[in-house]
Image 1 (cartoon, rainbow, N blue to C red):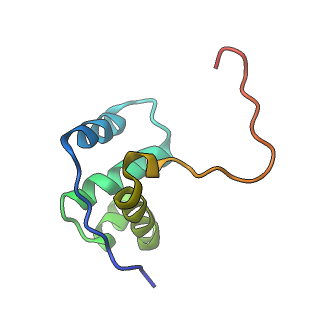
Image 2 (tube, rainbow, N blue to C red):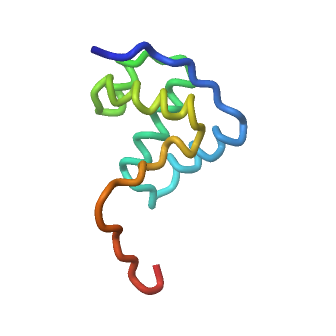
Amino acid sequence: MIPEAREVQLSKKDRKVLEACCRSPVTVQRDLKRARIVLLAADGRSTRSIAKDVGVQPRIVSLWQHRYADHGLEGLHDKPRPGKSTVKLAGS
């Protein structure tokens, strides 16, 4: 079952950040999908049509709509996971 859709309203600043993310050739695919989901939702597209265009399940679209609506751009980042943290290489 798909959760009820949330209305997504973007500020001009957030729209610019998400559009830049979509244009950048170095954006990680998961971040690109999240940005596209939020941009399409802000344009008034339905959950099912966004899911079809982005290539994800409708529940994933709903998840990112809710996360953005509740937390803004910060909500599009992965939540911390339990366990050992990853080691960063020198110079990263």
